[in-house]
Image (cartoon, rainbow over the protein chains, first blue to last red):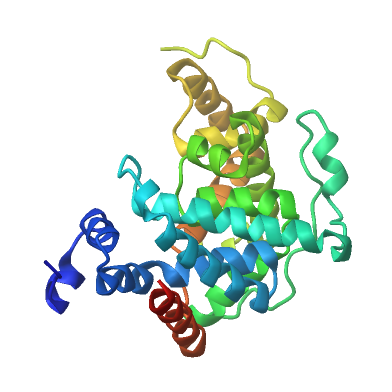
Length: 204
Length: 83
């Protein structure tokens, strides 16, 4: 039986996915409403392009719907969805690979535990108070400035909150590769944000 | 319990991410904390990195642009009509 509007809003994602499996489009639309913005953000950061991100977003939900029978409910629906989205985004990125600029810190990947050199902090007055929107935009820019190989790892681990193991699985990387890329991404972002964090480490 | 392993600044940086995530074993964690207690430079790096991670973890997700949302629903509708 189809769920009412208020039931939909209150339903957990597993119930919604099960309803959608039975052809309930409203249940699937509720999943779209819950997760589309996050899938879009992830796709935009990975592809660095709004049009590609929108294509990835559509492809992700179309594929998710057509493969709903493969969703077993062993993992969270969102995890399953993101796995589809990340694959789509990476595929699109690989197709575009020829046009990509090589990142400055890429060569540091070969180092054995060496720590990336300091990169200049973001321009701007450290005394400036940031509104929430400005803060979010500046965080988004900081993520975009990361090397491609660190970016997806950082997004999945720290922005989306997936575990190291889930991230490794989604990106086809070893657990140790995820850990070392995450460390480098975090240090780079800290360098970008440190003026805002203050010399004594206190958040300003 | 005393620190069993001598930790250098380089060792600390290598373990910092796992330390922030709380995923280090007890013995290494104690050694790291002993190092942090006596190395102000590493402490600042740790503290700023931890705060950086917290800022990103609590980062808001912008709403989907309305047109992007509408086009997504249209794509799904077209797909459902076909089926």
